[in-house]
Image 1 (spheres, rainbow, N blue to C red):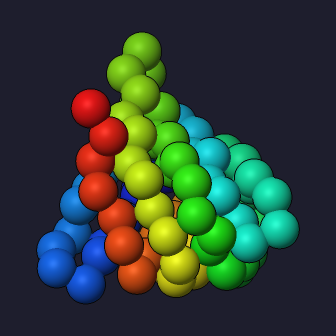
Image 2: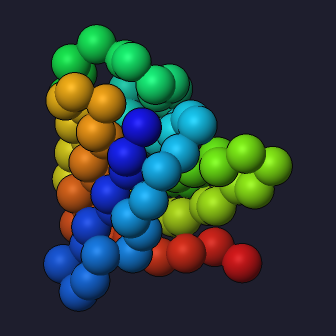
Length: 83
């Protein structure tokens, strides 16, 4: 699936992924390829994107997550890469 993470300042991630775990406003959500269409508000916490053996992590706050046709879009009020 294709994942895009966008913050007001910049697109912080764009690429393929095997899974996404995000902090929704009411708990964590996990997204795998072929997920049904879905939309949720984001809370604050750690967004993880797994690509094979590599995991990328971001701290996000506010905004929304949308899944449509194997595309995941995260539009966050705040997003920064974790080290």
